[in-house]
Amino acid sequence: MTVSPDLDRRFREAAAAEGLLDVGFDVVDSPIGPLLVAATPRGLARIFFDAEPELHLDRLARSFGPRVLRSAPAVDATHRQLDEYFEGNRSAFGLDVDLRGAAPFARQVLDELARVPYGQTTTYGALATKVGAPRAARAVGMVMNRNPIPIVLPCHRVVGSTGSLTGYAGGLHVKERLLRLEGALL
Image 1: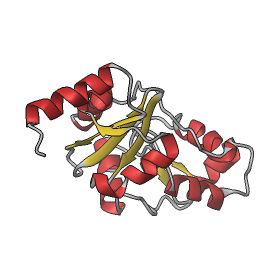
Image 2: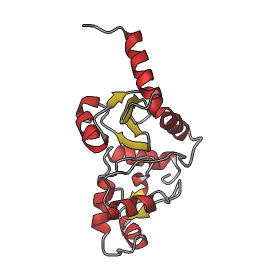
Image 3: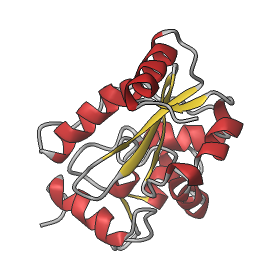
Image 4: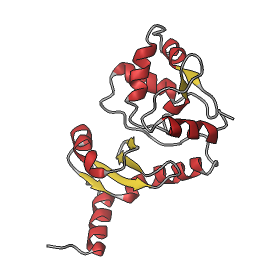
């Protein structure tokens, strides 16, 4: 059976309006490529640089619940704020985030990461020190590697101890572009 685009749209809108979604997601165009953005009723839950929904739907369902549906309204606030950020009109995000499933150490690191100001960088070691684990720079690096909400939780602002750009899920070229956008790199 084929469903008309209008019926499909109305179904998705009704499901979102009635609060029937565990996760709503959409693919958002950005200057660094398409991003898959997912939100729960608690807040922004994921941003994936690989925007192919089929790669992420099972993971989203396992993490947040089985009712996962493409729904642009579920991510409208994130979409708008990302657009503003990429246009250079936003230096801080005002979004609730859903970090369910994050281990206590990871949550502590991500909370501290959220405090790194726009246009500035920090190091893995400095973040480790701020969370009370000065010898845990590598563990902080692993948290950055698994950051579920890049850009909004700005792991691109974390650099190596020498100031060098090190790993980034979106690729070092994306990390460099984000830091240039923020004026952290000339």
